[in-house]
Length: 267
Image (tube, rainbow, N blue to C red; front, side):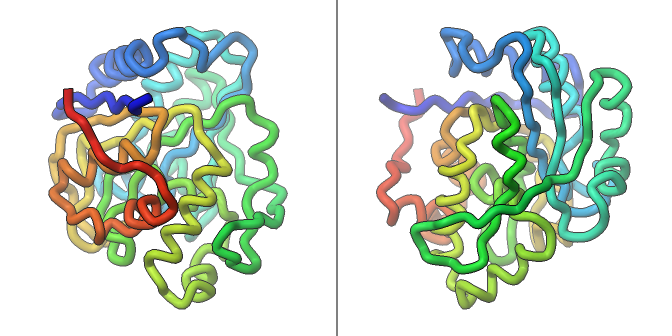
């Protein structure tokens, strides 16, 4: 069965428009309405790389996250938790700078650090790879990446965003452990993404980042939101929109080498 990627041109961070997109996306890619139900514990994994204002386009915009919270509340989920492992600074400080604090009072959202790093056996044999064991506490995981260029991996989006579930200072060390082999690093990312297996990915490309991403680039008005249950398909469509050579998007090249289908059909 072919994967579905739902996308829409949206030019600004209008809460009503983005919420409508989320609802439309779920109607298209979750026709049976089976993803979310009453009482579930749902983890939202945005890009909270470092403590920047939303205008810098380093982090997933808070309005995108809020729109998801509003929809989840209509499904009567039991608890919404936001978590990530910032490269620098505490999660609380980074999330506050990114504009997430109002979500706690408005929707009862918890913003808590990742915990319980446990060894993760991966097909690439990368040593010392540990992932947050607390993921097991959640019924559903939603991946909320930011569309950004990346100085090492060309593009960071759905697959790369889940690298944030490797806790703290271990992340830069892992680049060294694969000897800066970008394709091998991409294969490791595929292993992590397959293990985490988020039920939904919704990518914030309304204001994307160009240039020296994922931190030092500049905003670019891409004006698009994308959603899918298939991370590889979503990244593939985004790469087409951005006109990236697929073999230079190393997470996608790794997916191809590991046997994942990355052809796209536009309907």
